[in-house]
Amino acid sequence: MTVHKFVLLGSLAGAAIALVAYSVLGHDDTGNVHTAVPTASPHEAIPTTSPVEATLPDMDSAELDQSDAAFEAENAAHQGLTVAFTWYPETDATANDAFARARPWLTHSLAERMLVDARTERGPSMQWGQWASKGTKVVADVSLGCSGCPPDSSTAIRRVATIRQTAITADRTEAVDSDITVWVTLTKNVDQWLIDEIHY
Image (cartoon, rainbow, N blue to C red; front, side):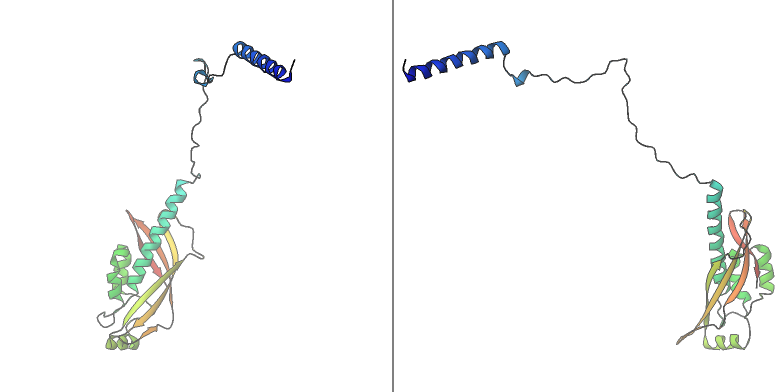
């Protein structure tokens, strides 16, 4: 037997074995492949995930109300004192006129007292006359604090106010020598806070 015949017979035998194996084992038909999908029995509970619920910090509503009340009261004090201590000596007869302009931020009882006798550390004097002759406007800058104040309540809030005044004329601006310090009591009147007491 020649070498060529031996190689030919070996190739035929290999092809026959491959043909038998193909027919016995089947073939890979990707078109008919079914992928198993896990299914749940109708009686099995399917676990569900729900979004995590956002929770707000547990804050006492009374604390929130108190904070809002303090903000409103301080705002009323700031506005009222700014108007009450901003003076126009050229047209104002006394500081009482400034308190008349601040009337919307004052309780009725304080307004009556202040319009009769506005007791301030400054008022009609030689300096007032000089301001009037120069057409000077005295502008107030108010800052509030609560150092040493009693605790706030739902009906009364007390603050310490520092009032810095600046005299403004046509050609110059000058700080008025000393600041004014007042202790202010604010009370709740229906739906708004009003200045009820001013102590020097």
